[in-house]
Image (cartoon, rainbow, N blue to C red; front, side, top):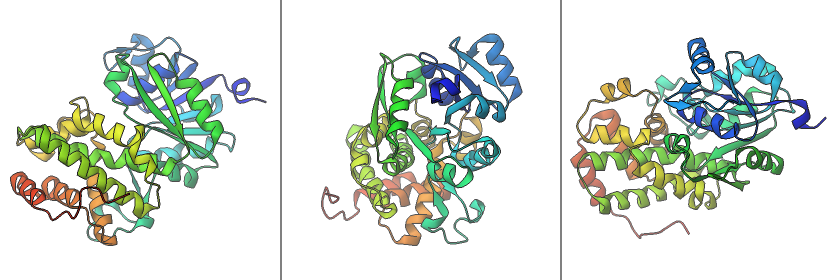
Length: 349
């Protein structure tokens, strides 16, 4: 039985801003079940047909049951914060079968095998750090996994602005299904088989976006912002090399494209977090007042301690960690990076 005939709906797990945007995109082509763990949100979406100030497409029905989602959807888009991704997979895992296809849209890392609160006390090694596709494979019987990557600012997507994304997977049928159900006149979908590179680029660029926001918050201009973004890309490639990823993904839509969008837009949660930090606001106050998590904060902590354990030279990551987590002077961090003895401009080709 074909996938289309077997399951009448496509599923989205997570009714945050990006999950809602993806559900609305899918609904232009197929019927969608949108899962939220909050029954009040489910009721509000179904009754008011509004969420995040955006009209919800008639083809979308919100639900509160992962079992119902798995039984009615063979292609599912999990879009939840990286910190709760494994917990979500353990909840839905018993209802998933090898015929399911999961294309996640989460840009961050999972830490497993070490208590995350102990990072820095215990040594963080590469074996502790996982991408979301790896978590899906570890916590379910699903084999066909993909990643939704690229510049995906939810607010612009929900406004119907033109943009593009990347569906990455080792399986060509996953890429083709992603293209089929997501493509619209305003939304172009590229395909890639380098899922690891796409996932790493999507997670790591959030750190650089925080740094870019800090510079803007300090009132600094485009020259130093451009320097940070380009040198930040170099550090992203260094992390990719450490994980065994190809360099190619970092220079496409899911790499430098996503980096530019996230590191220059006030619609980016990570840029906004950095901007407010650069303005002098308190870390805890910013976190508590933001409606959704800035994934880059957690990624900085993971990436810094991982780089430290494998002796990776990533001065921007180091300074971001000290500014965000150790209240190091932003001006001194900028001065440190300005005087850092980089050998050559481009050193990764």
